[in-house]
Length: 402
Image (cartoon, rainbow, N blue to C red; front, top):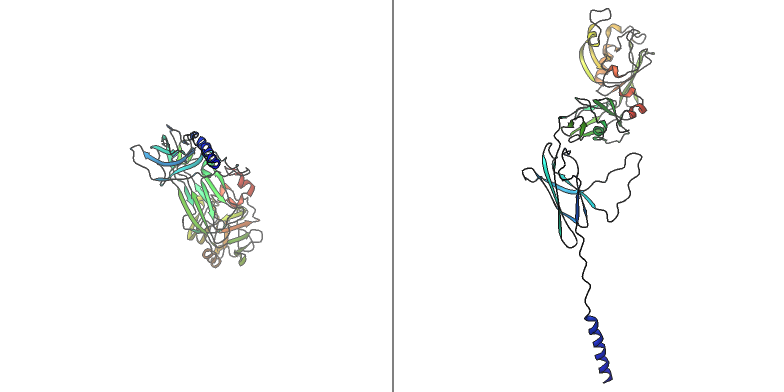
């Protein structure tokens, strides 16, 4: 009887606990959505990242429609972390409760001068849905432009050929443009962009390119604001090859040209450089074109043909070194002075046989370094490729991103 009473007592205690009411579960905070492009924004770049941040929930469906309500094809991806600028330390890791950033990426870039609506949804832990919407309009440029690029796509050039980008009009925001010119190569280099003037920018390494590599320029200029109403018209990619290393040394003091194929000296030719009245320019010259036959006309360089120093002379095997009239070419009339005296109007004179060999050996982008001439250094006055005559520190200072 005592045991039974005890059991009854215990059962009664258990019943008292069960009768207590449970605490109600807390409701989840609503999810919040932040859109980087605010509702009503105008003059938006068509390539601006459509970033979406969600706090207190998970991102759900994201859609973009045009002004007519037609959906725009695209997908959501993680937002790219910004890389620190040169000399800056990497940012700290985001806090655990920081909003999760993602970005909607269109399959093809958005158009200029078009209205779009971005709609994003998110759900919190209670599966309650939140929605955010932004209607914005992309910029309508006053003008759009696509620059010219050299070398051309698929071309093979020598180790001295810089990448040249030419704009039809002056570029106001050089930093914006330069930051969207990306150069990659199968052998990495320390190459830097340098603005030669307001409408021309070149890229070269500190030394000549490595031989036998592939180089690609991605000019991602669509949607880039060049400043003063000018925007990029389209992206452009150019891939080219660097061929064999051909660097020749034309010494005006010894009247000799040494021709190297890689590290091997393959020819040593007597030559005649520019005479005292028309000295050759000193410095690294870049081969830009080859003409089997050419008429040398002094009037194209400002000297009338009928003047005392004028001429109009047909020549063979002409390898152009600059835009001021300097060539390596056949000059059978000066064979007697070649190797002994400088008598040309600035060109490198060779015998016909030797000029033919050099012509067949050469390719655009090869280098001819003229040394010990009485003339000045190669400069902007001599044409569009005087890049290697610019000291490296000065070249780097020409970057808009320095």
